[in-house]
Length: 341
View 1 (spheres, rainbow, N blue to C red):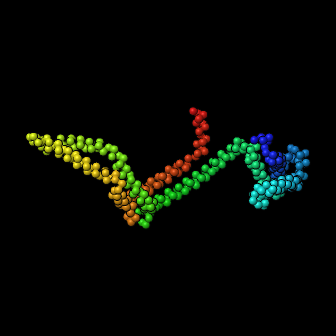
View 2: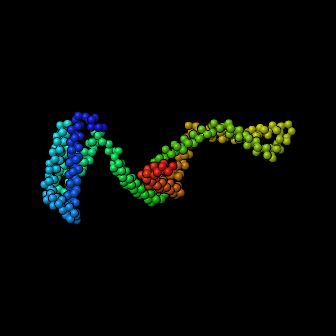
View 3: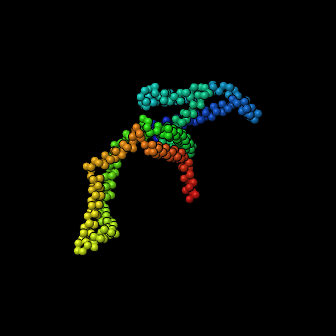
C-alpha cells in the first residue's frame, strides 16, 4: 500500500513513525559507537589515526549522558502523545494500560547504558505498526524469512528432543512393567477396560464374514462339496461293491452319495447360518470366554504379555524415528532435487 492510499487518520501516524525511525536509528548508532569508544584500544586507534576527530569527540563522549537526554525528551514526548491518542480513541479498556503494554518504551527512556539497548524494541514496534497499516510487508523481506527459518529450526529441534525423551521414558516404563501374575500387568491394565468393545468386534467380524463371504458363495460351496464327495466315493471299495448289485446297486450308490454330500453341506450351512444370525449370542459368549482366558489378572499369559510389550515398544521406536526426521533439512533438499532433475 502506498502513502497515497493511506487513510487520513493514518497519515500523521505514518509521518511520526518515519521521523521517529530516523531519530531512533541515529540514536542507536551513536550509542553503539559511544559504547565502543569506552574501549581503550578503540580510543587509541582514533587518537593515532584521527586525532582531530578524537579531540572533538572526547568531550562529547565524557558528557554523552547529557546529550542523550535530548533524545530521551524526544522519545518521552512521542510516548506521551501516543498515550493521549490511545486514551482519546479508547484503544484500551483503562487509561493506564498503555504504559503497561508498552513497558519496553518506558524502560528505554531510562538514561542508563543497559536500558538504552531496549530502545531497539521501539524500532520493532514501529515496523509492526507499518506492517499492520499495509505500508510495508515484512514477510517478504529476506532478513525476516531467514529469521523465521532459524526460528522453525530451533522450535523443531527443541520439540523433537522433548518428544524423543518422552517416548524413551515411556519405552523404559513399558519394558519395566510388572510381569503377569502381579496386580496389574501391562495386558490387563491396557486391554481389559476395552473388553466389551473387543468382544463386540470379534462377534461382528465373525458374523460379517459369515454373511458377506459365505452367503454369496453358498451354492458354489454346495456344488464343490458334492463334487468332492462324488470323487471320494467313486474310489471307495464299498461303494464300488454296492454298485455291482444287479438292478438297484447304482441307485443305492447315488442315493448314498447324495445323502453324504447333503449331510456334510447341511452341517456346514447350519453352522454358518447360526454365525450370520444377529440373534445368535453364542459367538459373543465364545469370544468372551476366549478373551477372559487370555486376559487373566491372576494368571495372565506370559507370551501374550511379551508380545503386547514388544508391539508397544516397537511402535514407540518407530515414532521416535519419524520424530527424528529433520523436516527443515527435507525442505532444503527439495529445491536442489528439482534443479538436479
